[in-house]
Image (cartoon, rainbow, N blue to C red; front, side, top):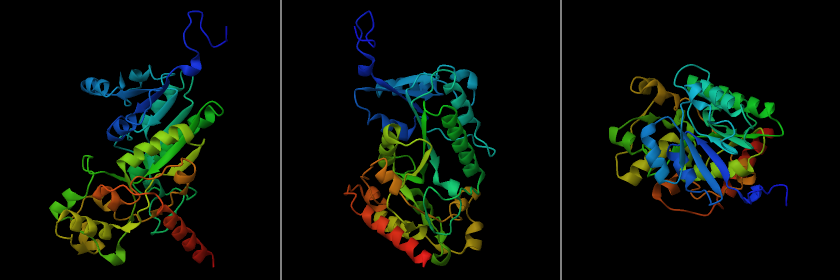
Length: 330
């Protein structure tokens, strides 16, 4: 009898289902679950007992637990052979105790083979519109971004502690959008007539369609390299004002007013202003070469129009990036 065959005649372990644990199973987690093949069992941590029936109806096994209460996480150790961490940090402070609670619970039994954490591109801070690869020094400006840096460090330390047993990968995610996602389009801002910056002081924005992000998460769970950060962004590199002008034309609204920074500071919240004080263009070459993700929606215009395109235009983004770098080296 083979060594991996049980006396009761159960299937060899190589034929058993892989268990994927999703921590923070919101919109992206649900989209991710749709990608699972029959050989993968999806388990989701949820803090809401009211969601258990909804998750079961989607073929997801719910596990009750709250990242703010480590005593409720005792079942997580050894539960998932692979883990995708999509939960946001706590809302206050500069450290993320939720990620700390999670990795402590995962370390109590055999660690997962792979832990993927969805972070934010906000960890880079303001880069004055420059192209930003994953080797860029982190310079978080807001407390929200500082919590993400703290979470990344916690995840990396977990991977170092279990080096050789658990790979950890970090996805740095920009603005997520999708027509079928709650607040997934700029329509509400356009309805309110929210202003944007004048072109002379405008900032570059980065985007990823929710479906493409879910696919990136799925691929990272299987293909992500250990201790590797990956910019998970589409090929858009639009100034925010140009993006909002295009959206206004697309949805049939009046284009938003353009104001200088002093004027706009009087009208917007601190959170809204934070997005207008950071400018960068993300380089997504690792995502395409290592995860081998072919974007269904290469630009935000494609995604909001609901038109799927080939990923060939990504070559143009790559060429623009290298041309820009070569100019700076001269």
